[in-house]
Image (cartoon, rainbow, N blue to C red; front, side, top):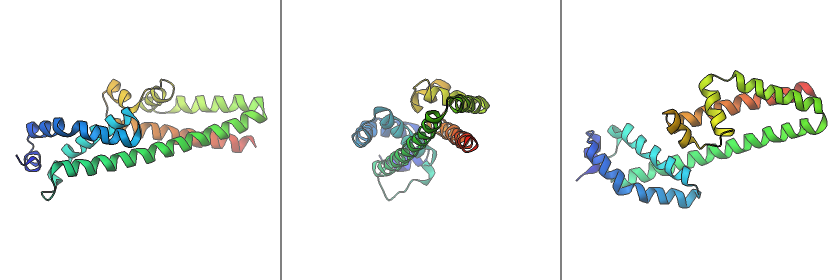
Length: 177
């Protein structure tokens, strides 16, 4: 069976067969590279979603497993870069917060009030996702499943919240000095 042709035509059974045939292989590939079960599962799911969404653009020149591998690798790299950027942003917020706290108890209180106000001012869905992620300790996949949204939406909302918090903390520290 030519899986590429069948998937391009929208054959869900062919797509399901490809899913069961290659899911485990790609899962363990990403797991080996990232050492994260959540990231491996999330990456593979996103790869399959992308293949299905872009099925009409699949190339007839390459087998489906090659195209899946390329998509999974691309998603894995993008996700790792984003997570590294988030960690860096959180480190900056923490360092800025620690510096402000170390100098003045009043600044500590003001900064924490500013962070709380900023979190409360986030749009409701963004706030809920941020709280589940940061305070609830849930993974993007777990949040996506709980709220019936895509992991990409979760990722975008957490990034939006972090960007807003970084600005608020930076402004608080600037005006405090």
